[in-house]
Amino acid sequence: MKYVKIIGTGSSVPEAILSNSDLEKMVDTSDEWITSRTGIKERRIADENTAASDVAYGAAEKALKAAGVSPQELDVIIVGTITPDFIFPSTGCVLQSRLGAKKAYAFDLMAGCSGFLYTLHVAEGIIKSGGAEKILAIGVDVLSKVTDFEDRSTCILFGDGAGAAVLTASEEPGILSSILNSDGNHWDLLYVPAGGSRTPIDEEVLKSREQYIKMEGNDVFKVAVKSMESATADAIAKANVSPEDIDLFVPHQANHRILEAVRKRLNFPEEKVFANLDKYGNTSGASIPLALDEAVRQGKVKEGNLVLFAAFGAGFTWGASVVKL
Image 1 (cartoon, rainbow, N blue to C red):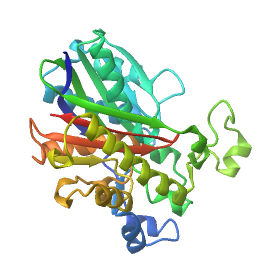
Image 2 (tube, helix red, strand yellow):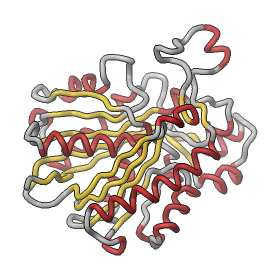
Image 3 (cartoon, rainbow, N blue to C red):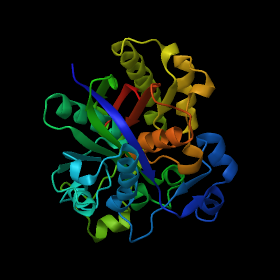
Image 4 (cartoon, one colour):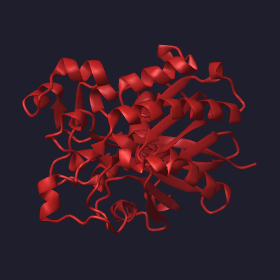
């Protein structure tokens, strides 16, 4: 049986930092209030000239270098994002051009904060079917572009970043399980109302600020915890391992209350959970690969370790995966 293995990771974030203290000067909030409710202390913000492909490029370069793979060896590039450079063409194609990955075909995938898990699953299927040998999977979002910095309930949460992984066919186990789910009945609890074909942006939209993220936070929280718990349990069972076998849990970095609720329900010790949302906030599809890359580079996870991913995002979408590095 052919397996699919992650052989290199990379991440990239914009240089500019927006701290909680900075937000205190913009909206009616405080560092103590934000920290106690979310665990976030600061987030990275892209400047007006920086788009998703720019941040993704930095992550891609690092992942390719770590994997010892040149852009010309890539067969496919998949970009998980909800903040593409353009409505079309895909950010994947823009990135392909910049990398010089002439042999690859490229496309985008939209699954909100679950985007990277979806890209992993799609990449695994392409490789197992014989359609590719090496794939670059990226999660990237520049949520600051669609964040309303007059809405204190959402602007405290989101940041910008990218994470990447190079996947290849392998004779040794890599991705052991993937569980993906969605429930479109809740699409309107977390979305950007305008900017698509239903509500194009015009002067009235700009006045109403409908081009920015709208979220019913309490409703999202309840479904997120239950869904992530269920998906992680299913992924562990499908991988035929036990919770005790997991070396590191790398969840989507939404807020510390969700992370802590899922951790307790799964009975994971704190030292087995990797969190960096205090530095980056919720970076959506970039969240998991950004955290994974940091964990790898900090020595928190090594070759041969079992890593559990779990995410929940707009759609609603959610999922979990067990991967042997």
